[in-house]
Image (cartoon, rainbow, N blue to C red; front, side):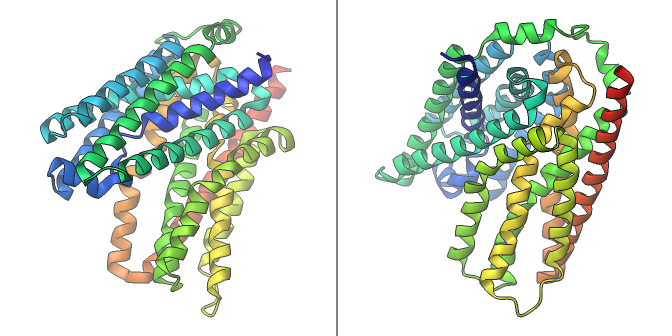
Length: 413
């Protein structure tokens, strides 16, 4: 197989892995009622499963990142996928809440421990330093589209069952099978020799004492904040869905269609963002600085929309932050290459930055919900103003990373 073609197919396989492995942990977002019915639990118990998983992830990101730099990414990814498949099958044949608590705790080990950092490291290793943006963008598009495909298959299969419990069982089996398929694909496609060569070319291989060095490096913290801003903005774009119905008076079906466009169709824009970063700006940080500035203007502009604006114009405007947001977030992890971090330490840095980068999962929803509960539709103005400020902060930090990277490059000449 042509080397360049295999490289891209491998990224597609990594995208399938990412889309498959998170099916069970977040299954409630697609099969909420079915899960509650199958397990005989209430809403609080359902939420506790995900809370346990999220807390476990935060604890394991850093040690998992360190181990990802010590062990083979290929073996780490395959073992994680197969372990998740086993957990999924166990869950499908039990549906017991006590057992599920243990399964969701174990999912932290199989999906976040070494998997996440190994996955991001593998994407970086496959591409050269000049094509990091496109590689991460391509991965993210494949990840999102794979997730959509798996959900579609699971929904179709479950819909053919005679009752809701049998349907949920079938959906879980689909999720487990796709994990096995992804593991087999990576077994044949992911080349550890390529990874080993990439690490050997560095001046020094990873050592545990390097963790302390990374913690003292300002650029690592700056990258963490960029990821926090980028992820917070991307994950919060979903608030346009209730905004369109509550404030603009658009029907729920029309708003749902917009959500599908923003969530799935726009995934195809992630590689476009990568190409812009690599080919136009030749720097992820420069592209992020511009994209985040545009997002700050777009989110701030929501507050200036005239009261008499037509629903069609409101819908079109709401799609703009979604489009730019995906072109931005799809490449956000590629900025790690501009933080002066060697490939040998990529896994550790991914683990460190993920701790801060995914903090919005802990408080954004609760904070935004409280604003809406307290102020009604006026709460949307607070949400979008907050997101505009977040984007502006991210743009400033991205600019500083770009400037620092430029100074470092000149010093090395």
